[in-house]
Length: 324
Image 1 (tube, rainbow, N blue to C red):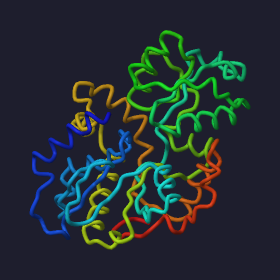
Image 2: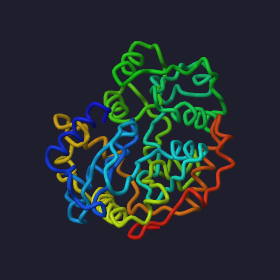
Image 3: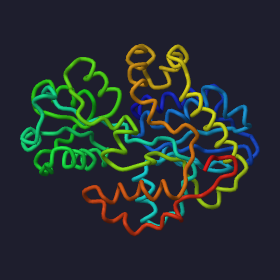
């Protein structure tokens, strides 16, 4: 889901009573979703849509990183691992306490059929990556180096502004490969225009090429909000949404295609979720060992050396009611 779709959904949620003024501070949570997370925030939307947040007695206000909302109560941030690490380096006292996504939800694909993709292909291919997704190029470089023994040069990377530009660039031969996410990845794959070579939509592939287990998206709070009573109830609601997502039938999933902005593309939504479902945590569990491995992965990527000095124990906290 792009930012515009997300803001429309958040506004509609507020109109329906999701964000309600006048509730006690102990029941109120501001959920700030990092811009550009897309479907990595799906469990939060499902927790709201399925009524779990309400059932757990939580009144939610939705926000994004740069808004000026400052309601009473706690603030929960939904952040990519790299963003959490960057803020820790800046001295922000954030603690992660629940894992949402355990794989980058990206795929590296080539325009050429798989039989024609070898080391020489990657020495010359121009590789499209999305603007605003800092990890796409380092992740692609890592897997190309590991699988084919080639480290792409800086001139091979082409930053593309969005799915439409990426599709045109691929079809017109401006790029010979893409490292991209959903829904474009599945669209191009089904159309036969892109042949996925390394699929980081599957935890097993992520563990093979990046090490594992990993946490790629998590729920975070400041230290002062960790013990807030509503935060524990958010944990319970999101865990229920994660369990639902891990077992829901195709019929049940199709009813929520609109949450991803795909109300008129349900067949594509189901194909996409078939590929993505395994990337979501089943229970949200997050511990120091998993965070350590995840930061080790970040530090091993090109340009990631700055993350080596982070104190992992200070990045993870325990919230009553959250798995760990």
